[in-house]
Image (cartoon, rainbow, N blue to C red; front, side, top):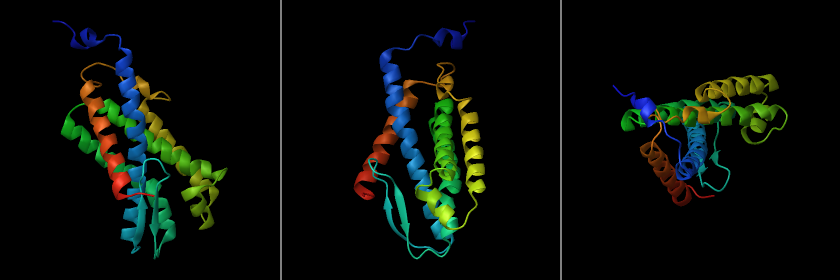
Length: 200
């Protein structure tokens, strides 16, 4: 019997790699932004805060304005802590619904963790955004560093190392045009909703 994995392993053409880059990079970035802000929103709702404005335009830095905000520390941390959990749930649903691209979607979740880890962890040396808010609210710098190490570490594990492209192997249907199409559709949907429903 012919080994389907070996048989399917063929050099990829430039258009396949171009499509992969065009899908994976913006999809990973938008999933990071949307789930991070969803974490803030959930944190606000759980602590009795009121969300005043959400910005999810793909060409600006996302944010969630909460006022009143009874628990600002919880809301500030919620983006980086609840966001990846929401991303994991979304990626799991995508895998179950599409039954394709497990490895590809897993690297998107890895990006979410790496991005959150860098955003918060690097706040120890360059506090911006949430990291700055968390420090001003009284958190110890080591807590941000510890979160950063943990999140980046888990994200790299999902990538299988520092190179996420290791997961993009054309064996057993793990990486195909269907999966790329799903990500491109996700990019278009999140970008359009962000532009028209959550503008800057």
